[in-house]
Length: 197
Image (cartoon, rainbow, N blue to C red; front, top):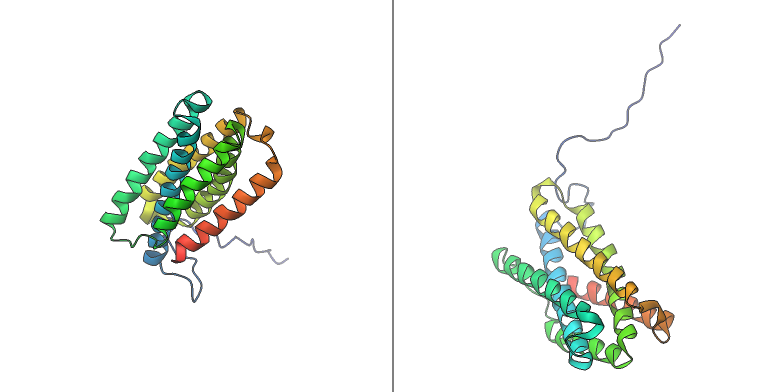
């Protein structure tokens, strides 16, 4: 009687390196990480500008200070990415002037519709950012453990921002479905552009 051979999965053990699963034509690990830092710097910059626009319309004490608290956390994230941009000599996106104006305008416009619309804006943006950070975290290997840990921490903050927005009535905003869908689509486009330009 012949013995059957057990098949084992080809699962790799040991540390995974960034970019080890890349295909021909994909970015190498260095370019991939630079793209991540570029887009995350742009995203945190845009988030700060959104909150600044909201506070300009609603006042700093809006929604019980929740907006000001979230803005402070985004400023901390931005400062960390500004440091990474310098340390790793990553070119920032050329679209920063657009995000400067567009972020503030989005924040001000949603706040003009009321505090719930401002929170709907936050919830929509943070839903996209949650997925965005999750994708980046999955691509980073043990060689980028510090960057991955930073992104995991920031992702947790963004999820908390989304939940805060829901707790403050985001879903009760006027035209919530349309507003939220448009902001999510715009955020995805801003990510795509900031990675490349």
